[in-house]
Image (cartoon, rainbow, N blue to C red; front, top):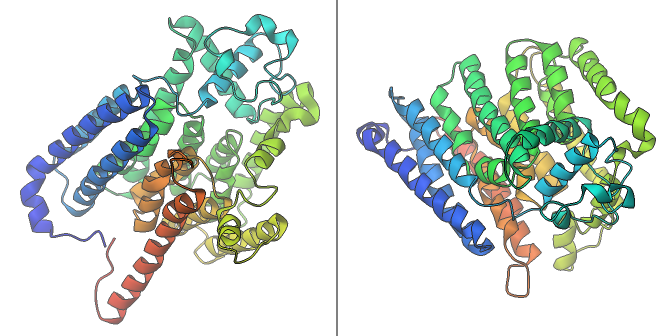
Length: 449
């Protein structure tokens, strides 16, 4: 479906990529201005416009022979867009303020798993920039796992060394992790023998730029170690792969869903490295906080509607259209059956030393679809996989994710409209793509990318 005349691309290629870079940079400047002005709808519109340019650039990179200057243009444009993304404060989410607070609390000798920000014992750590912007400060201890907390602690000391408003340390660290992810994607492409220019699929994608750099979400660390784990798996380093995914799981828990597509069956190195890494990194936090190391996670999931069921988009839609009212536990059980089936297929329907990136992407995409994240940054870990396996449905899902920022009623879109656009439209695209490939195969056609 991304097919286009290669001769036309070769003719246009000399100017198309620089033009796409200039357009992407210009739209990034508009997006930054919209964030600065707290114009969320304007920001989303500009990001969708950027997505159109991005798709054109992606088709160009995938379909034409790379030219000598292409990689330089791609990387320079990516850096410029990230520089622009740093200009506005991270005001689409309050997460960065919690990161700064957790780092500050640790540096002062307290545990963020045991003390809510409003705890009187922490009164001396409050300021006028960070503390007022912390979400649920009166009742929520942190929800973040140990590696995330170690990063927040390190970012605190970076901030101490930098002038500014308290956010510079965390933003500098997240930017560095994002740039490292770009380099890791280049290394992955090289290890697979693919054109390094395909790094554009990650480096120009709007989600990493606005979620990792502009909003400074910790998911960038999980994404980085996922890519490093993929590089290790491609090179047959199962121990390093297990260690990388353990680090990722201790930033955000979702990287573990990808492991069945990467583990060499019955190779003891990956699970052993995973377990040892988790045990070593959790041990000091467990010693300090005991069962409190799970923090506010359970209550957070309830706040998002997962306990009641309405947080899952299939349940929401069934209830909204008066079709059914399934309990959350039944849905979760069904979702686990589906994910287990996909995991077993990814594990056993291949050679032990084979990595099927298409199944890796399906595992990640199914996890996102079934868990129904309500925020765009939970989609970004799929983007590096697209550099290897650029599937239309996954491009649609990740590029439409910023719609979740749109205001709700009154005066905005409904959750039903958002869910249909962000989850069900990509599913329809995926099904249509499968039918199209089957039709072409049955009629002697050649399967496209």
